[in-house]
Image 1 (cartoon, one colour):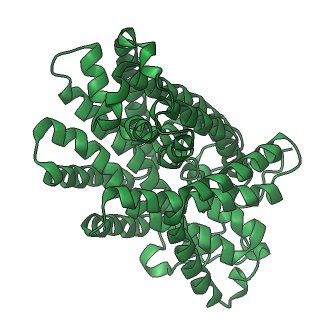
Image 2 (cartoon, one colour):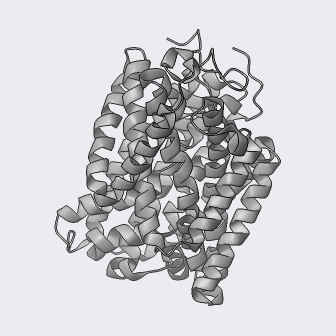
Length: 429
């Protein structure tokens, strides 16, 4: 199979790691410990184990159907245009809603250093958005190279932080292990979904790889290993070193580095937080810009505003600015976004059960489907937003009477733009 993509395997791995690692490693250890105590480590472990089949499922679909529509394309092929529109809208409109709280995690570190409260947090958001939009405006080759360097440097910094802090670990900080009861583990898992969202974002980039059949699965596999090791190391070290105080820490990485190294570490951790957030927002905006164009191509969104990746990027950016001005807390916005992403996971893994051939990939998809269904239940009331968005998408798609959106079989033959690359790779088993 030939490809006109420019994304290398290393760049793809970096985008995957950046999409998932990003903001989660900045504040999630403190948030999870705040609702479950040391038992939050079990929630971390469960989400890490879930990442393997979930990421593997999206990688297998991406390698077999490399297309900018990502999960939306897979659901369209499996269940039709209306279901695909629901998935596409859930992801596309969740990205601008999630950008402000994502940047707020980094903004908290900057405010911890400079002061200024919410004004500093918003200023950090504007700076991050400006950098990411500029990188994506000039294409994925530039964005991918920047992401590769960012991810390498940040992974090294996290390793240094863990190594420096570990000598101060105390096993006594593991007791009481479940101060908020065992139900707190489920609550922590629902919170941690935010930290593990990202595997579906990079599936929209599968068509941008130089060799999707080979590179998508290998890049994703490497990313799962890197993310799992770094997440568990940072979470465990945070609990063992900071103890009960972790639940009240606005900047746990800064506290860890202060314990391990000492001195004026707030500057270093603020820079780390900003760079991690740039990596995460970069991967999401890159995926959303391609997804928006793919949805327009398939008639699920109007072609005028989002018909090209650049126009789609501008729409997502404008939506992010509007979201930052909404009178809702960043925490509430985070939960609403998590609900949308979880519904995307449920429908995406359901599509994999229909599209993937028998074998390990389909078994992994079955495990991922059951697990994400459980996460949707744990998410609770905020998941209702995803149902509202999905219903609006179905209503919009129902107005389209053209044959090119009336059935899954029309996904390649009747595209508005050049034909999507949605035929399975012939040489795959």
